[in-house]
Length: 252
Image 1: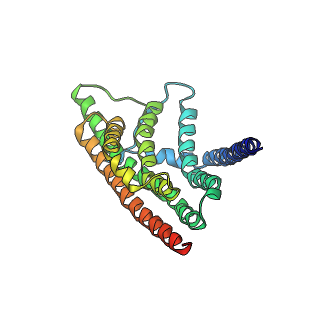
Image 2: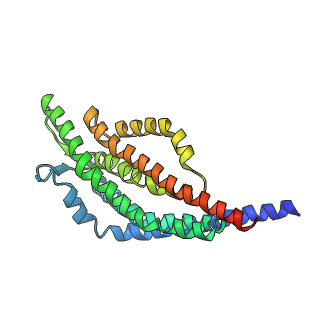
Image 3: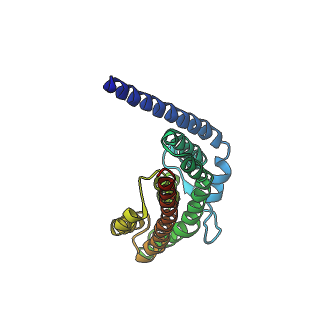
């Protein structure tokens, strides 16, 4: 009988998870379609050199380059807009297992998801991307190369820098959320610090051109984000311990 209940519980949880995923996918597709109407101004904005203000001439080397670029821009817009909704669905899935105070605390993080995404987008586009363009451009001139940019390659280069940084700026919220549901705590985060720093170094090298300065410029805010996450996690953890101690005294 107990095994049957456990099986039903697992099936119910999987059904609930599937329902939440369908919600997220449906909203993502709707926003993706709507994003096509704002792609044109975004495209013209990001094809102007952020340092010089000069428009970059792009070339299409395939019939599908324009379609592919429009899809990439639309997907980034859709990802940013649906991130809060996705996190809300995740919260709704795990909230039945949380205490009322934890439910309210974790729900407050959701509006900040979009803000952190925009902050990462701005840092990636206005700081890291111009440095990457400057580095690769100066190297091409040094080698005597004529620069002819394909629109597909240009946007692939842009997305490979901006999108990972935008997602990494969600790190404090993710760690706070995991702390609230008691999957992480500051003690564990401190033990993971060396491994975390190593991962951040690898990420900063992977998403920047091959020069020390650019990688270092990206690494510093990533480390600060991690340390901010540890501090915020410590604050939440202290409140959890105080609430647990108060609960124990109450029921003694």
